[in-house]
Length: 385
Image (tube, rainbow, N blue to C red; front, side, top):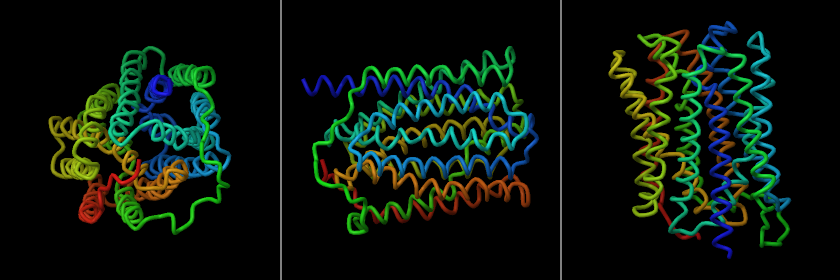
């Protein structure tokens, strides 16, 4: 009976994730052009807005993870997060200058309060043998939803424009809210101990080292907006740029589950290493060439990077932290790396404006190499259930 309920939970979360990413990715492919060409922001402002969004993601995930563990509740954070995302897209549609985007960007990224509690549930209903697979399924559905959203964007953008597309994008997440409210039971944490929050002694040296290298990596992992603007600078029109977004999302969707299964079979660390190498190759390609073939290749490899990193990283973290602190640790990890992502996009924007279009990629390649070296010293342990 419990196994049946666990499967139902996974399916409902997968469906809600599909819908939310369908809505968000109806606008993401045109987001950087909307900010820069319609609302008149420069690349530094775009980097600031995107970086601010990533920082808020990190803070919201850490806060929700802590509160979820402390209150012993998960569900409310999940449906509220989807609701925030839906409302933010309506706000984008009503914005007439880039300054208007800031409060709605805050609301949008605060919607990530859903992630740590949801991921804690997925980790808890999984075992060491299928945890990578389950996170892979969730990420696969995220990317499939994004794939559908991008296709809708490509088909409808020229017909209805930015405003109505943003309004339309709010609907799928509202449906996701209803799915969570009606089909997910409130998660009950069996451990009744008083929750005192994370203490330094709860952080193993292995987790600290992985957090350190992930922070270095995050400092070089600037927003995807820079990749799209780069493509727009070289032979890709605003109407065709979403196709590149479609390519990397389709690749990420196709490989998320296989990489999750490979992590279950061969360990988490080898797949994480591959993910970092993929991002290094993306940076290297953007440094070396600007022809159409190389740009398309870079977006394919970017999809491989996303498909390998995101499900396996969550799997790894959930296994190297104490079970009773999973939501807090997952959220805390996202907070630290997300706070690093804020200056990453802002610095990338400054380098782009002040030095040149390839400057951010040189910095990213250097930080990726540091991360790969440090990853050799991380212990890929399966000691925790």
